[in-house]
Amino acid sequence: MATDTFETEQDAAEWLSRPHPMLDHETPLQTAQTEAGAHRVKALLVAIKYGGVI
Image (tube, rainbow, N blue to C red; front, side, top):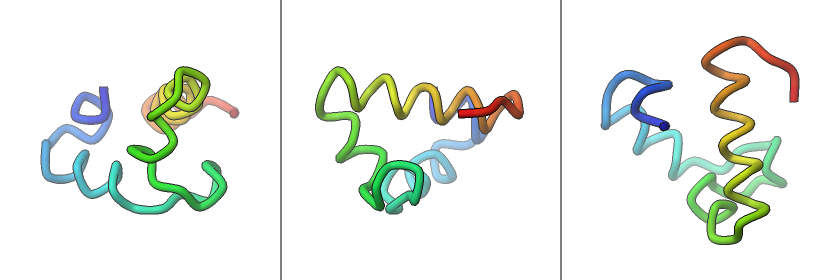
């Protein structure tokens, strides 16, 4: 899903490994280790791709 959002595997990998303020300054990969965290990451990716609100 990150690759689809950012269009390249490199950009997706960079985003997934960079701490994000909307994820309590954890990386998306760290956050996605739990089911609830994976839903947060997915919601963030959808908002980034489609301009939605989180």
